[in-house]
Amino acid sequence: MTHIPYLFKYNNTSFAHYWSKGVGKELLDQLGYVPNLAIAEKFIPLLYQWDRVGDQVIHDLFTKTGFSGGNASLFDYIDQKPLAEAQKDVFDNFFRHVDPDPEWLDRRKLQIGAELSRRPGLTSLIVLRDYCLMGGYESAAINKPLIYTGALKKGAAKRLTETVEFWVQIMKEDALEIPNTGFKSVLSTRMIHSFSRVNILGKTDWDSNKWGIPLNSWDMLATNLGFSLVFLVGLRRMGIQPSEEEVDGLFHLWKYIGYLLGIPIQIIPENENEAIEALFYWTMTQREGDGDTLALATALKDEPIHAYYPKQALMRQMMREIHLYYNRYLLGDYSCNQLGLPSTTIGRAAIINIWKTKKQEKRINEIGFRENMIVEGGREQENVRLIYQKFNSQ
Image (tube, helix red, strand yellow):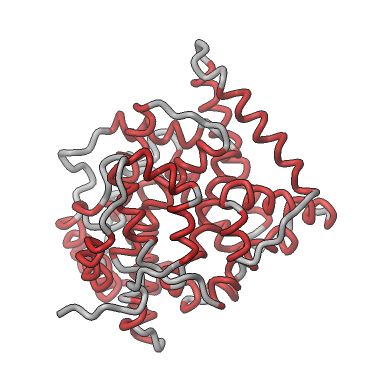
């Protein structure tokens, strides 16, 4: 019988509040029923399933070359450059299990999903940072790998820089076409996950009885939901009203990305209703954040103060307050209080961007307006990526 770790206890008051009194209540109303929590126990084995295919690459190559060397070889393989026979064999075996162009893939839907992600511009990045990323700290177990890999010590700016780099690169036009940067970025991220897992299990006192295997399939699904469903909810909270075609494209996009990342294809949601049900099961089987995750939340809260941009200390303090306002606006008071996030008065200046976003969305069906927003939004996101790379890589 599979061991039931401590997190499957159905007593997380934070997430229970989300589904009974928070935004989750609207999602359940949309779904039309409350999922049977007892069914969640069938997902327990996923805590002990992981990307063995990716880990094999780490064992066969990355442990010998180091991560940078292994990653360079991966990119050379994708670019069809000459490789040593042993290295080529490693990646030949990997891609026997990973089809970059599966028969179910609809590249038109990928395009539409990426366009939805680009067209809100800075608003998309706000949702990712202040809703998806900060909200994820409400669970203890999923964040343990961050602690064990030293993410807290490295600082929130580094993690934000890496997240922005990953997300912006994969959302660019045709980014997931082989051998473009977005496609490489997804597979490189998969190697990061495997490299981290192999090192955590091999070099630390990780307790699998408590937390399952590091970066297991169940928690990887939750991360996928954070980028798809939770991101979608956040966009709507900010005033974006995606069409059915855009929503369908967003979930197809993250189905493909999730597949490339090694998440079992059968558990990745096909649509919004499936995603709502999956999010319910995952959140309601999580313990609340502990001291480690509260420390991560605090680090993210204070990231603007310790960043290198803007250069003026007063402006960095202002950015901190603005992000705190978005935290309250998107997550709600209950979750922010759970995470130890203070309220703010000065940060209410963020309302201007919300107002601007809603005003623009009213024009989305005007001829040429949507297309222009996709171009301008993508440019805005790229500028933010470059700022993070320049100032936070110091």
